[in-house]
Image (cartoon, rainbow, N blue to C red; front, side):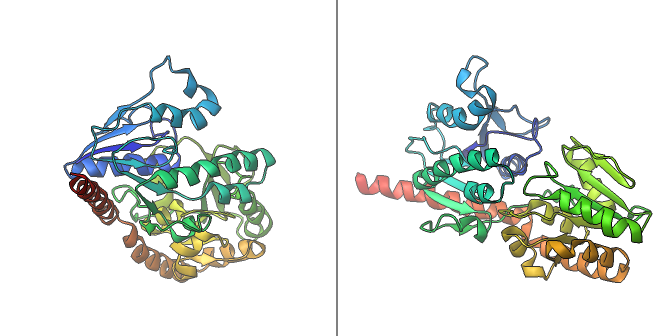
Length: 355
């Protein structure tokens, strides 16, 4: 099957989760015999088996942040997609006019992001994206959502749920944890909806006084000084996976997650998860069956309790490993292949009726 994937950013330039998903999905589809071309603003990651089509250097409408956000959809609408059997859009399909069937994946909701964004300018930015999401869903032949929570802000949408997946080759249990008790956080900023600042406060106020040797590992764009605090930035996937395997506990106290890919990466690495309630965590962690979901006011106490109780850590980690099997790439790719077949067969049926 000839498949066009639409995704603005890729791991060659960004560590964003949707870019990694698109890259890994395209790679798995190629492995299964499909011809895949990704339409993107970024070049192909090193060693990619799929092709990439980018705007030329003279295409001014995709320049700058506004161009990357709003101009990419305009550029996509000018591309000839008629030579593909199916188009798989991770976003930006709101202006497409093509007879080729379009599958749209909802990786969350811009409205959900806007509601939980801490800054007014960020709220306004995501609020401006939400109407484009609605239009993109309306133009798609079929829509898949990465979680049931992702459909919450699209009340009239009938979509099936196909979860995100993790790179099994990288995120797997290790043989040795760090010598000192360690907590891992993975996010973009400390003061966005990931709420890393809550974890920093809990670490300094509750954990460090009780466990002076404890360490907090922050994988984010911010830099923070402090006893026991270690910061990491621009990690490749192998280095990130290594931190997951060595950490004693993973904590992502987000106010909103459409899915929560890092939760699955931690579980697949055999690392217990602690979080605050949000739609993604509640769904991925089974309401608390596969990890600890605690109010923000109890975050420090729950983390400390887990750090000093090895048996409980191992019990939660074992449950997480079982849950992580629900997010394997072979299962997710097979679900998308079935969806592609349905929309392609539907197009053929309509063509036969017209003749």
